[in-house]
Image (tube, rainbow, N blue to C red; front, top):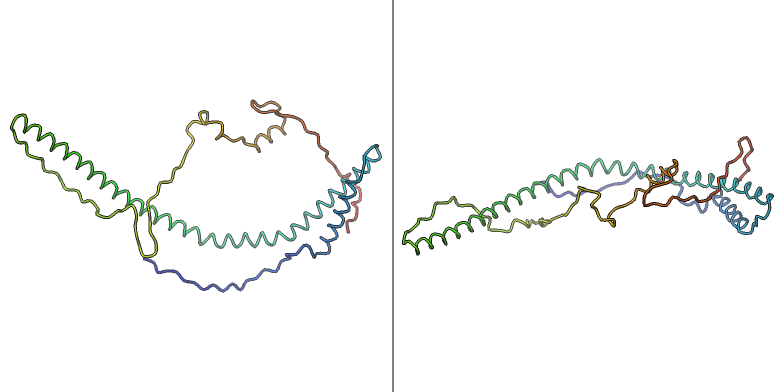
Length: 237
């Protein structure tokens, strides 16, 4: 049995990353631009082609703001995500073998418990057979006067303790039953347990499929703003 594990861990590695975008001058400037843009969008009325053209120009600016904001966000999150990824990888190299060892021990205990349960079941079956045979011998004796000797049977060792629960100094292992399921006939599954594959349906609808039984496919108007190539991007600074 392995000894109880006790560790003292000295974490000396540190990562220096930006964690307060609210005090970043660039982010602060972007916030002001977005707030101003929001107020402008709220107040704008489109009643002419000139208004629509102006709004289209502004939507191009909105796209540039979104791009700048996303790039800045990634500057903050990318180092953290990479750090988290490295941490998870390091711990996974340790946790994976632990999971294997844990599963191995669990399987061995469960296998042993199954053997003990099989022994108990066979002993119970043998006891039932012996009781039935005794009743039959008594019937023969009463009807014919003939004494029928009981057959010799091999004794089965039955554990005296309850092997479904194993009590130890540090823990107790109790047998449980986990119910699982597998698909055998999807057509017979009740509708409330079926789920649509939203991503697959969206993909085929975008590809041109316009009729799927049980679904209504309808158009929804949107607006795509495409920056004109070659035009100088407006300065956001």
